[in-house]
Length: 82
Image (tube, rainbow, N blue to C red; front, side):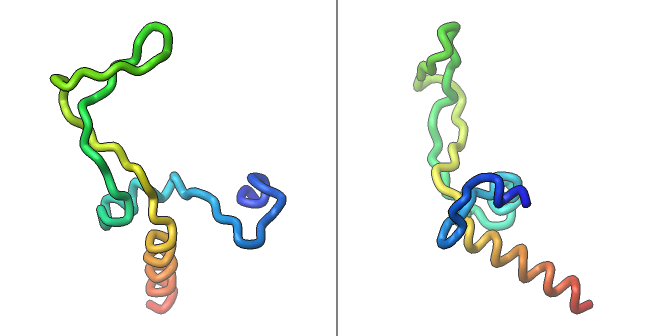
């Protein structure tokens, strides 16, 4: 039901799965590729600044939804077959 609320056109449309993305990253880092950058600084005017001397952080730039869902469904099927 929640999925239907995001868009009225459902044929061929997919939705990000942010609630599963972090677990997907832990299971397989290839499912959520990252770049390492210096941590940004939030300014008073709500803009971002960068300083190459700050500690590094990882930024996920893509979530590979299909392998995450495939793994999840496979685990559910395995659980149900026990």
